[in-house]
Length: 422
Image (cartoon, rainbow, N blue to C red; front, side, top):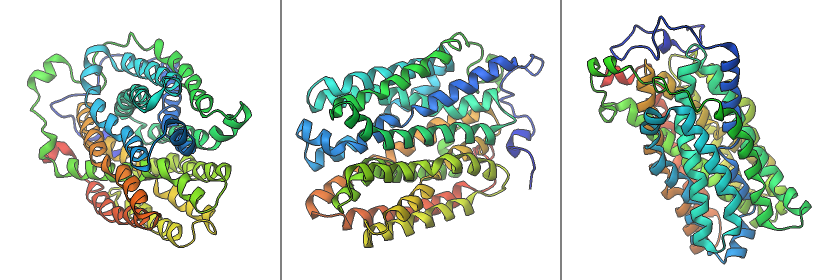
């Protein structure tokens, strides 16, 4: 078992070459610290747009006059936007530089969150949400790419750091949205708009990185591009397995973020406590999102981790079905562990390719395809909930989806790279 971060980073050079000229001097320490700060602040803003809405979904539904099916559409918007806009990230990074793209993404998040509660009507709310989610989508794709470029010898550590920040932002939005809303007069519009402030702060470090326009992150030089073979990820079984794993874990995550507070509220749990339960679920990702990538990067096969996480989810859903209120805190903890499939997926994206160029393609393919896979899940949960009048069928669906997720995780975790398969 290797004792360094990610074994694939020490593989033999490939025709695509390194991320930068081997003879070029390394980046200065202050620049690395700036990139690190930018990664953390960006990651903090990649989920509050979603979990803040989940905490106030009932109030938003009442305020905008939504049915359960329309609310299901609303919870399906994030993965749809991530799939549609995520595929643009590599091309935008090549043309403008990753720093400029992420900076623009943070601006879009801030703008979307600031205006969506006040535009009026469901259509305007969806359009403003899509603006924020567009910024999240391109940043989602570029996070592993930026880590691979700036910290090639610390992929596990840096993936864990920004995954932990992402989980922190997710949990904070779930825990604080309701009390902040109550403290500011009880308007759900104010409670949702407040998260635009955090996104505005995240713009600052990326402004200094806008001019980072050399070779795009993970991209070979022009000569290397000319000499490199074409990498067709659609021919890679590992690429498809990773996309499937990413899509199924995203399905579970967005169902949890969008509907779990409502499940607890329908079981008689107060709104404030339901928000705290979602926060506990998301907060489990804070320590585990740092630990799992470090452990996974030292293992030849990450399949056992995927099996363990899915098993925790199955137990959590069983408890949510049988005793949602009585064992609420235990189920929230178990589902929080299961949701840590996300940092595992990000780590495997960095490990299943030997080069930065491969990571760019694999990240875009796995995340965009994965988010397409995840679109029907939250919508179907809303439809089943409305037409069955309860949570039995939706919870059964959530549990059933963990079985193919477990299988895909085992296949994606095998010790191989997309370059070998393509």
